[in-house]
Image (cartoon, rainbow, N blue to C red; front, side, top):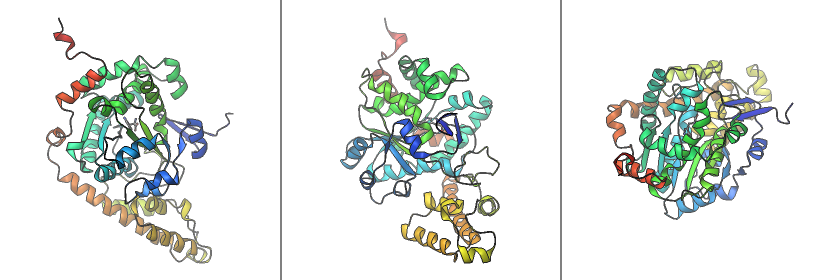
Length: 392
Ligand code: TRP
């Protein structure tokens, strides 16, 4: 029996995650109060409320962001299904930083990774890639400061870089970091994700990069930081801002789209959201109204409350009022669910309106793709000659 009764890798999350122990195990640092205060005003609930709870090298990023120097964010998506509300948080967070500090944002889609991991055809993954791209475009990033990369569609830049980085990583590092891979695609994939994390610097030159992601992705960050540390490329090690997992409807500590309870999808309409929350959201309330009025509920385990706390209720005053009323028993479980459902449905209605207003995918994406000069610059910084075929 291992000392921990949970396992967290990019490919599997099992057991009851002890976040502080996991942070220690991974060797990341706690996000301090002082660091939280250096995020641009107004602070973001995900930071203020400790959803992002651990970090690597965030100081140089905050310094550049606050000092008007070049800085970038990389946060990506593995397109293996429709996106649910938990998937979109890092992107809205990246947008908030971009608006506040002018951060460059890189969004890679790892369609290759999802082909290696999931029992899904290339065709299905390609469909999800297109669907997910529409959701990412609906977030409304600034095209002048945002690049979207799809591994198999941007292979002219992803492959040479990944090939260069792959040479720096041994099979035993991969085995020790991720567990023995199921296929050679997964042995190679860490070099691809390292490419994503280093791409802004390879395009634009050395600067601090921050990767805001769920803590299960930290192994990719570690592998990438080791590659960056080799000094063969003039890049700084990317920093990380690591989050806890957002709860799934059937209770905190559980996650994933494949659980029994459904997730709230970005495409759900108001009626569906209300129905899912009322039917499935795990409640911290008591069994009967009388008992609830007498004893009060527990917001800490109540999924409707946690959704509001993590993302959907920005006002600290309002969230504290809700928690207090719930503990006192004056706010009933059904009432709390109603507040959460309305908030989530409002958020989704706005998102869906922006998505519906998009034109063709090709047209919308064109402003976000790497330019020819940017591709060349990245290949050059990774050590490739301008055009291998035209060399004498
Ligand atoms: N591996 C991530 C996932 O499975 C997706 C991803 C690809 C990503 N590249 C990234 C996330 C870079 C953050 C940064 O969800």
